[in-house]
Length: 172
Figure 1 (cartoon, rainbow, N blue to C red):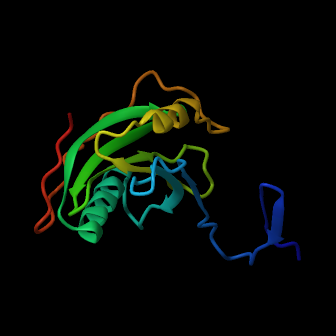
Figure 2 (figure 1 turned 120 degrees about the vertical axis):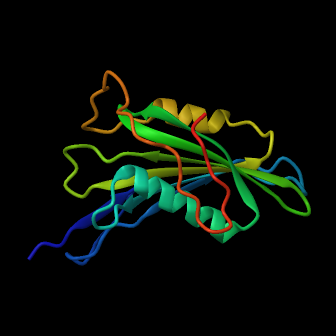
C-alpha cells in the first residue's frame, strides 16, 4: 500500500492514509526595532463544517477570532476575487495596553473541482496603521492551479449574525 506523500521545500515524508493535511504556512517581517511588533502572515486551509456554506464558515471563524482575542471589533468586510476565486476580507482591531493591533483575515472559497473542499485563510497581523503592502502583494500574486477568473464574485449576505458580546460586522 502506498501512503500519501507530503512534500514542501525539499522535505518529504509519508502520511497516514486517513489523515487530513492541516499544514500552516507562516511568515514574519524583519523586526523594526527592539520594542516594535513584527507583521506576520499565516496561511491555513480549513474544512467546511458539515452542512456549512462559505458565508457561514466566514462568520464562524470571525466570531471565533473575536472570542479568542477578546475586546476586538470588526472594522469592515468586503468581497474580493483572489486567485480567480470569490473571497471575503475582514478587518479587525484590538486595543491592548501597549499597542493597537490590526488583523486582516481573507477567506478564499474552495474551487468547484476541489476533491477536498477547504477554505484557504490568510491572516495578516500588524500594528494599527502599519503597512499592508506585503498582504496586498501576496493576494495579487496568488494562483490556484484550477482557477478561472469569474465575471463577478457571486453575491451573498456578508452581515455576520452577532454572537453574545460580539460586535456586528457589516459589508463596507
